[in-house]
Image 1 (cartoon, rainbow, N blue to C red):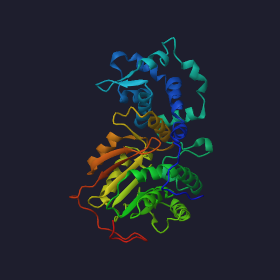
Image 2 (cartoon, one colour):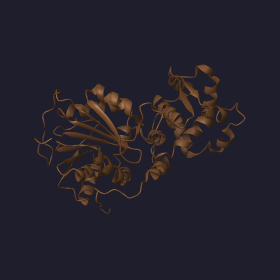
Image 3 (tube, rainbow, N blue to C red):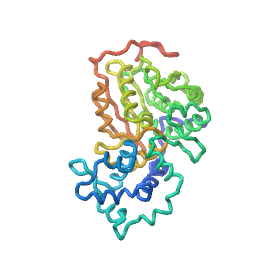
Image 4 (cartoon, helix red, strand yellow):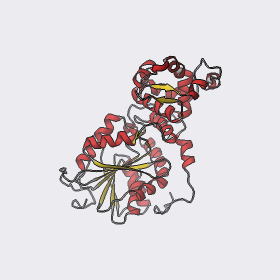
Length: 369
């Protein structure tokens, strides 16, 4: 790895290249809905009443998370629209070109793609809710993304993938967040440490710590040292799913983490962050966010399909995430765009909320948060 100056940004914008990779499975999902489910014909037959999301999921035996992902994509693509009462209807585009009673229906055009591996993978995921990771690479299905990262070979490959992406996204996130008055930041499930290093590079008064479980913790320590940040970026080995988050940090960074999990786990992790942060502590979520209405942006709706294929999660809307943060006790939720269809959503733990007692983290003073 050739270390780069994380305070610099590239001269060109690779957002379109990110989208090609992030949205790879979106066309496969349309193929599933059109060729395997004939969803658009069924919805056309519902007439003026339309159908609810729950009815659609029940009709096609789709788990609710995947129904959410599918409906979000088709709304963003201009194929479905939601009425004031919440019912879903076809748009004129979908009615003319995707319902089989139309002379312009594209069903025969998509039919040869029926057996594509990505199409069959997505159909299985939609019915079972179980991610298949990248099965075309020979990875077996996993019930739990977290468990897959315990395999050293998979963890090595995936950490390298996320590290590559982080060289653009990490500095963009660090530039967008005001950490004035915060001395220590905990990067939870921080992978290679690229985001922790980016925040350290952009905020000279900030020290950061990556929380990772083995074997990724050792990989992170090695990569952090290679980048020249070993004096300001530490690593602590812990499992965020089974252990309390350590106290003593004024900010928590969740970068591309919560999107790996379904709603119950997301709510539990938000609550764990609230519990561990001190009064006034800053919650930072860096991710690809849907808008409040969850009908776009289209690149994020496409990326949500990829996440649903590979993980137990999906992309979340700024509105639903802000609501969950508020319900957990946070306040002052605010969102801003960063780079490549990503953004940061921040919130504060109110000053009148009790905080945990600081604990000693290896290599870091316990008093400074």
